[in-house]
Image (cartoon, rainbow, N blue to C red; front, side):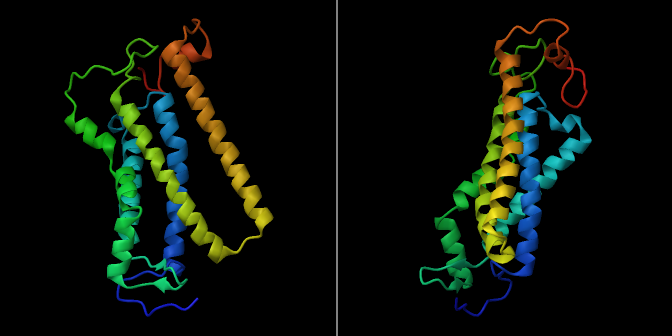
Length: 219
């Protein structure tokens, strides 16, 4: 399709720089897809107790914030099929479209809650393991991170246009990733249900995991 002349500091949606950024963002989104259910299901709530996990969280937050800003400078397909590169039209199109949703998904709500909550705040929901903070609002706030995964749909469409993989290859790859991610989510949800609602027999693997978190720290 015919493309308008780009303005300064604008990114074409299929430019090499934008595609490399999309690939990097996709990898960060996959980390989010695996780490967030693990944090919620296994009560890994206070990431600042672990320097590595806290660092991973901040890298992901910075990545999605930068991606949000880049969306203001990335062209889009207009109604005629042309790629619009005029800065004002690009910004207005994003603000009227997915900006609000992306902003909610990008905000580090767990940091906001941690700074705002009282030091002696009680859990919102009762946990099944004595002494843990499974029911804290912080873990529910962590679930907002999963909204970031919807960016994969937009990234997938752009990469599909550039890479040009065969339909069968795309289908198999998508199916494999979906199965692995959904299996991981189910495992985390099942353990979460067990911790919240079931009486786990002493000596079982689940009761032993109640004594340490998924990083091996005592609870």
